[in-house]
Length: 339
Image 1 (cartoon, rainbow, N blue to C red):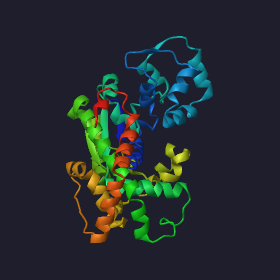
Image 2: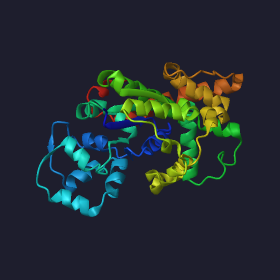
Image 3: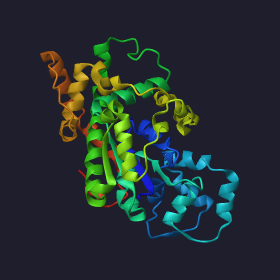
């Protein structure tokens, strides 16, 4: 029986929603985005290291923003007790000390977006775990990222009081950069999956499939874990108490308290055709791999010309952005070979 669950995926792929639904099972405890493995590896620690937990160690881990947020939530007295222990612990024990869980919980784990870059470490520490890779259409992912920015900055007018076409054209570079990052992200994590995760320990889960048939996929996950599906997993009232709603990111995750909206399957339809074209230009290969259709929208001659000029002018910037966005995750020397 598998005892650990690790979820990962690109930002705005529905990882929080799916983690929330899974963790509503009474036998499952999942933490939202502690990024502890990322923090530990970024600090230079390896799976066979012996570590004494000190304030300096936590400061090192805190260089990763989400990891710092997680550590700040730990009870102060609990942390002080950890500091008083002079014993050097394995990385696995440190990880579990910093990810305390209820004593009687049967299955535990976490959702961290960057887990996909540390599958080597996670599979060594927890070889009998279930890994859930969550994928979402990049057109919808990137649109969701822009909407999140709008909400965070309290912009009432999504188009900044400009014409719709003008807004999309001016954001061509940004859409291209995010599309290139999405494609590179999944190229790397797919490679990591193929090297370190046994097929029986993996679920590839498309967000669109999940929101159309949540009960079926939650049943599949439960079967993999060796437990029975529980109706609480689709109890929307219970999700009002989800841990993410107590965090600074609550503004971006209000939909987890609502009934799953199947119209989100094609949320990118509100994007201008020009931006759909831009995203597909940089992500079509990976999109086809995951079964997403390519629309290749027809653009006017002048629009097509302008987009090609803009992309050519910013080609180096787009490539550099995608590499820099992922560079911090390249703790493993194998990943540094990515081009």
